[in-house]
Length: 628
Image 1: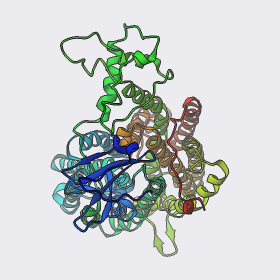
Image 2: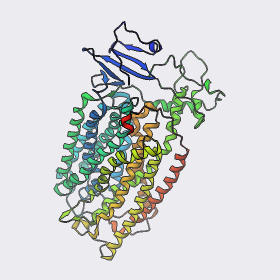
Image 3: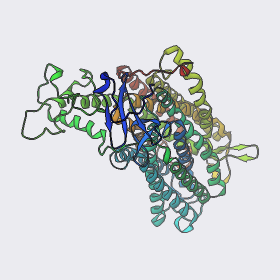
Image 4: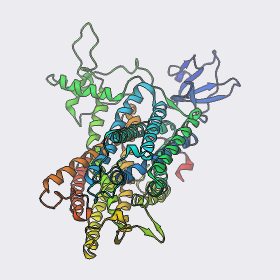
């Protein structure tokens, strides 16, 4: 990197750079080109030169300074916030099915569907909040507001769990025929609290990863490498918070009271908010654009449909594009490509001249069209995560119910069934640093790829492991039911302490394998999107991942209902999964069904991954210390 000296009003730049320089008098910033790289410097009151980060400001709206704003040190506050938020919310995701059944007296199938709908809503709303954040209020404000909303939702759940008036009377559900299901004000409080938590968590999921990525500059060689490690450390923060959540918080909920467990989550959420605000003075903050790149992508699709009857020019140069000489310095340009999706080029057909400027819903730039092509090509890749999320939903519902029926004692300690996800979380806590510090440098030397292995190969490995996880789950369920039948315990009530003589750690392999699959697939998809997406859409990388995850949770609800409808005469309870007694259901067949669907999903992924062509990446100079 060059060192630029502050200049006075009479200072002159070298002739070759004179036309490329621009001085912003209001901020005292001198922006100039040096060997193809844009560098902005600011002279402070002491005459010291400080490098300004392009396109970023601090929380007061002043230009962000490299070394003072952003970077690894300031991203620490964001990672801690993300970990604490997961600490507060993950115990709900894994333990709510027990809460629904034992406290609210909601049946197994209805409770599972309620939980998957809650999770699906959280991920779906994240996409909408991401658009709102980029268009109106910015990411860091979105994180603060969302944290407050989630805090209120947790507080409502805490108050309901503490008040007997908002819960049905105690009974041994589902074996007591006199059990009453939650209704009236109790049901209202439950739904309001749940969905406030879902909306708040969605806002954090939508804005926080993008805000953390804002702390690194892709044009800076050192920070570019640091950002490539960011997604792995983000996963590590989630796993660390999650590991505490599914052990300590779940134990509090099950053995000290649900009100105390929810209250602890509320306190941690408040701490997460304070930690995020503490880092506010050091953040790099993206300027709110007042528009969203998704709208520009949508304009291309609409314009292509409206111009469908028009003939494309033989020469692509005749398609509409603004002049580079007249465009602002930060305007993005992308060369025209014939493939894929040639039909979208009709959106860039030059319209007949009129007195008014052409509508952006009928005439779009070539660059805008190419961005739309890239996004459309990535859609089938991201859809591969739908079935995988459906499988994840079963580990958060039916597998937890499996654990309820099994022996969970470790010496004199009895482990809560919802603490089973601690196994893959512990694996990931150690696997992420090993992968980042061991495997990636080793693979990088062999393949020459900056990430060790290409993104799509990493996703493919995760999809294969998800198939293995569902197959293991089916085999373990067969063994669990055989133990129940052998000991005459098919109708045993686990709520009365009648657990099967088989350790719950038989469930560990399916959780562990799926946890590793999670690391490969979802983090691989995040890196894939961030590397391939148009610059204006990079901030929505996490939201594009939450969307297929949301669809996966909703699909879980549909599949469960469809399976019960199709197998209504197969069991006395009216379907493979219809009864509240899991020993009488056919969960093993359901897991085999998911394994088959996952295999077909993998074949579909192979087709689209082979078809996809990576977008050319700009190479960056790698400092010598990072090559070692």
